[in-house]
Image 1 (spheres, rainbow, N blue to C red):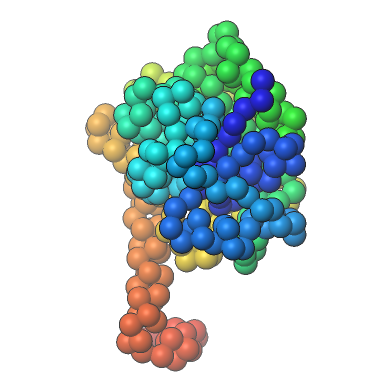
Image 2: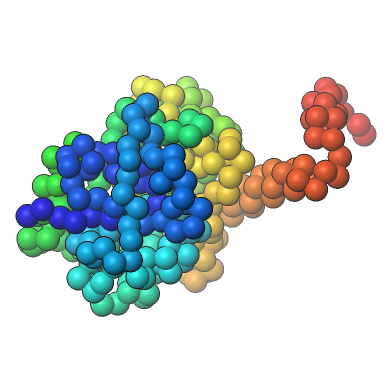
Length: 328
């Protein structure tokens, strides 16, 4: 069964999916509007130094069998509006976003479609100027909330992704899988955003392991209230993975912070805070990290606005801010 595929969001994840499926000669198109569409048509997509002339979807094109949603969480509402004229009720929607909210959000907007649960991990893609680079395509986990028997649609998607070189897993309990990925993001993404440590440094700084464990333990307690089957052994498994990584990989949130972009903290510790209020269960570690990351975002956003408004000479500001010592 040859699938017609579309992708919305060609960042680090979406670009690797497009590149891999194009190599397999899959009928794949990118849904993009306005300036994004113009840029793709004029500049193409560059992955690992190779230029790919991607097809930008047109409204009158045949509707896809499968749509990968690879945008950031804060862009999801806009993406769901953008895809409206490019899919029909037969299109299977597979989100590959962080957190636990994407699938319920998409189901609410498109109740007539089959909306799967999904996430990707172990991918090491990053943006380098106008291109994307990676060594490891990563593992894609997907399926319905429960997957005892695998239907023909899931089998076709799995086969396509396997042939494209991804690790592919249809978890029996995708809710558990989504929460485990959320737990990993709760520790790794947030700690890296605050410390600017990469995976290799996680293994070498014992204090980082302590914070990782504390942050994930708070989510573990909330999982118990929500009836999700994760345990302390899952926390230990994640710690083991993070502290034995052999390469200086940067988390997606650290990449965002270093590039002075908005992060997904609202969908990681922000959602933890909502659940902690729901169950009257304090989560002080995640609450603190949430406000620190939001403060960091606000600070570099403010500097960017100053520069755009020409309130002061940015080079002078940077010189002043780098002066050693303190003023009391």
